[in-house]
Amino acid sequence: MNKIQPLDQVRSIVASALNRTAKVRKNFESFLTETMILILTIYGRLNFLSMSRHGDSCESRFRQNFKKQFDWCAFNSGMLLADDGHRVAIALDHSFISKSGKKTPGLGRYWSGCAGMAKRGLEILGFAQVAAGVSDARFLFAVQTMPLSTRGRTPSYLEHMKEDRDNQTAKCLRAIYDHREQLLNISDILVGDCLFASYNFVTGAVRLGFNVISRLRDDVVLHYLYTGPRKVGRGRPKELDGTVDIHNLREDTFVRETVSLDGDEVTLFSATVKGKALKRKIKVVVAELKCGDKVMRKVLFSTDLELTASEILLIYHSRFQIEFLYRDAKQNTGLEHWQSTDSDRLSFGYNASLSAVNVAMEISHRILEATGRRLSVASVKRVLHNASMYQHIKKFIEGQKSDNQKNNYALTDEIPSNLLFFGVRDSA
Image (cartoon, rainbow, N blue to C red; front, side, top):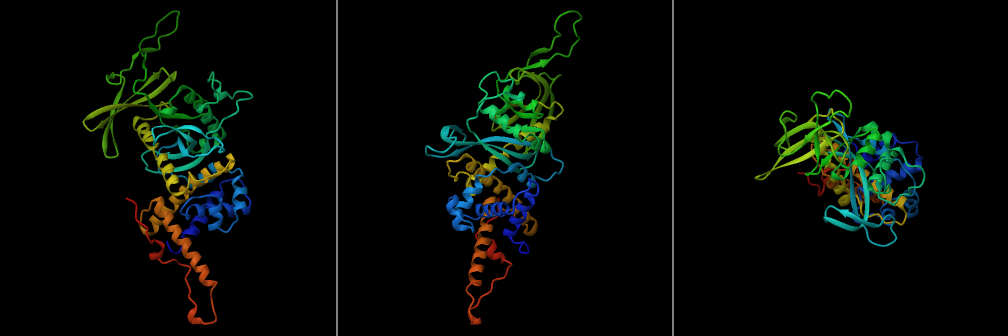
């Protein structure tokens, strides 16, 4: 670990990720590197003034560069999870950003999961790479929920929406369309919570070339598909064969299997049926879960009929990893700190904070390989803060050399382990 300093590792990670993006200027590359280091070393509120105090650039440089457009999806594609045979998917979820005031763009009332109610603030929609059965995720990009103009010709992926083409679903589909090729290079599976289990979203996503995995309501209406002999003569062939009761499933249609999930045995019942609300054939997985003495059943679905029941369950279970990215960004990298009356600067700040979590995870893996210590994002930030303090002290001492050799102190480029890991604890 000491042979390659942590701050140098941040620079190498950022430089490697920038190789996947469109050609950027040298000054922007140095700015982005400095920004990532400052986000991961500053304790306290993050804003342009505090970054100028701790960094080598002036406040105006941060204001000007935060206004620029940058391909965050391509940048974070250089830090994806390793391809080790697990089924990869793209998780998407909204996150509430606390914000007060009157001039912030996009300010409104949005749902806060922590509060369990709608609150005044901001909201972002984030995309992350997840893998089935892997307790990890990598952030891709985020867009702020903003009012959209619906002028002009309606895109083909929104034509099925008869009205209100400026709602949350339409904004999600527009964000997916803007990054369609990049997302398809990662995975063609989108996984989200119940909000995305709607006809408008599923139909639009399928038209864009994606499959959707999500959870249906407990009172969802599903129909068995008719597989008997076809009627000879005029008239529409029979398609449906009764309504599905999730508590009394047909054994001749639903296939039963048992899988292990977080150390617990989960019974799955899977079949291809038709969803009334989704107006299409879907692969349904009824998961029987034990909660204390109670046994409850939850209904998952996939538009990809070829996926197995265990794959659908594990992919949906991995969706929750995006919540940990939001948590780490809010607690450690200042996701809720950015202040500006310009939407571009806010968007840059949100993506920078979440991308810094990716960088911290990469540093954590390198520390694990070198020292065997497993560190959280908070602990990685402490390590980088210690390394930054050491560099500042070393620079100060080198600038205070005198003619009297007895008064000269020398610090090596190699940071001692006891200083580098001062105050750091391993993650549980």
